[in-house]
Image (cartoon, rainbow, N blue to C red; front, top):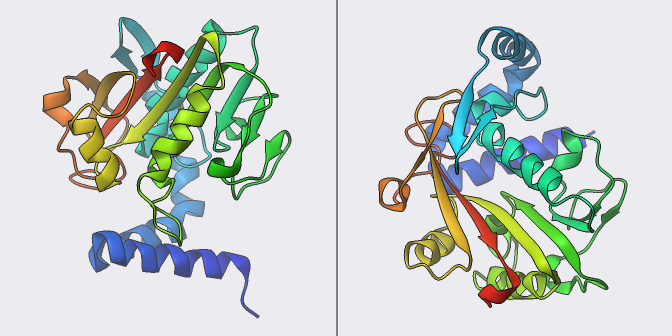
Length: 247
């Protein structure tokens, strides 16, 4: 009998070949297949022996090491501390998360809209069809926008901009929409970011080693970053902050 896990692996393998070639696809499948043995050892090593910090916009953050999704290998190690800081700074208001990410790492009770993944407080809906019924003080999108209209059967690259318009209009007057986008993944968004046609103040982080080393850099230093090259996963990351009056 075909299991859901085997179907997911096949889907992952085919998509990896299409995007990044056979070599990367084989490496990805091998990595996923050996995770059960390697990941617990790596997690303990980084958690106990490699405490690290990174600077971002005048703050010194601890890298986040968590067993879910191998954070020490990918952009989650910097995305999550930054987003957690926004959650704490803008506490006391309604929060909406686009894409169910934070609940895998922290105790959360805010509303989440996610097309595929279920869970507590998760609304299963396509973002383009989601109609917020109230205003939010904080809207968070962690490595989600690059999939909208791009990783879907009906390709529509400009869909992400229509979704952003709806989300920004759902902010309170003092609210913020904070997003992260890995560079080199979605060519349409890469071009928009390069031309400064994605709203908001944008800041940039660059990966400097295969495991958990990032630094804040200028746009010019990172804008041409490739996904999965030279290091696995994102090598450049955009952190964007949109205010209601940006529209």
